[in-house]
Amino acid sequence: MISAFETYFNGLKGKKIAVLGLGVSNRPLVRLLLEFGCDVVGCDRTPREKLDAEVLELENEGCKLHVGDGYLEGVEADILFRTPGMHPGNPAIEALRSRGAEVTSEMEVFFEVCPCTLLAVTGSDGKTTTTTLVSEMLKASGKTVWLGGNIGTPLLPLVREMKPEDFAVVELSSFQLMDMRRSPQRAIVTNLAPNHLDVHKDMEEYVEAKKNIFRYQDGDGLLILNADNAITAAFRGNGTTRFFSRQGEGHVCLKNGVICRDGEEVLPVEDILIPGVHNIENYMAAIAMVEGLVEDDTIRHVAKNFGGVEHRIELVRIKDGVRFYNDSIASSPSRTIAGLRSFSEKVILIAGGYDKHIPYDVLGPEICAHVKKLFLGGATGKLIREAVENCPEYDPAQLEIVDCGSFDPAVFAAAAAAKPGDIVLMSPASAAFDQFKNFMVRGQHYKNLIKEL
Image (cartoon, rainbow, N blue to C red; front, side, top):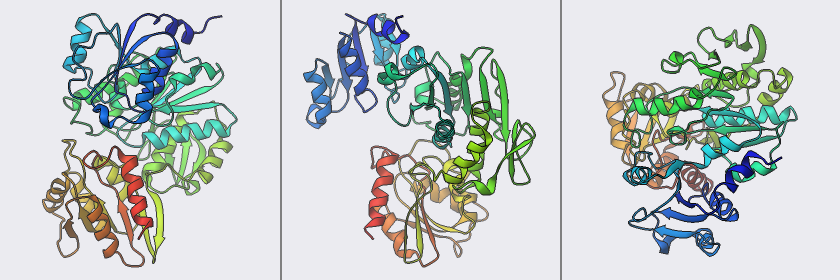
């Protein structure tokens, strides 16, 4: 029997395929297309002299390169694979679509040809930890799990290894979801708050993109939502909709320090190894997702042993009695707020970075309540300072603010100001693109700086 994977890729033979963006996730896609005899052009804004060896090797394997300035000019294609970072409304994409090109993505094709059960997570905050928790719970119960999407390995080239009884657990960003026309069997939206408004036209477009994770579910679909978030609380799925709540009632909720599901006790929160009330919510969402698939004993085992995901309130080092934490994933105010609330004492905070054109006013009161010294750098440093100074609770005598200009000086100044017993938290509330390729590079750079102190 011919698989959906083979049917799809055999149908591409002889067609002109344009792959927009030659980052890590699209390179395996290019190889796959070449393997099936496609005429492939790879388009990337990086100039030729700055391309790495792997991209140049794709050219040796038969991929035509359109790179540097004007990399989208003169491109013709029957099928266009959009990179997540490029808006579907980009004029070059619209022009190709008007000439008959089909626009898709590596993730959408994966959803089309995936032979196993698809579980997916999106949201403004918590999606990586929640996705990882779902994966860990399923793996601990003996199931074969394929983890990917916005984290992990590109999954499309691995489809041929997947079996129907396996599970694909996928994190999806708003960029990946923007023009998706397929949804997973089970979906979580952890929460929604203003984010990525430098790419999305407005908040409405951002929310509508997120809805695609459940928009195409059928009556058998399961949608899991945060009842404590005003936006997600208003959503409803096409199949079963269930809510989790830390503050009120839900299918999964918190009662007397225990996470309960449908009235039954599942997990005492004191058993959760990773800190922060936001991680209680992440566990709630994951518990709702794996209902019927994972035993409660397995869930409790994972909670007691799972140490968290890198760059998410990650303890880097204890030096001279000072604890240094890496929370580089915090690219929005809501994410930094969650990090600040994870500690019972006031911290020394390093914040600031690339400006995604999102509001910072909500961050001011939280910094006043949870921070004793604030070290700022990057384009959003000024915005964060204004949010704090405009806050009625702000007391200059209790909260020192230091503008350091950029990342490294802020890290060094924060470390120098710390005394034994202090916590230094790098939680920028901003994207990394002003100085770094992504939050992972920023987090690793921070860890290197701290380890060299």
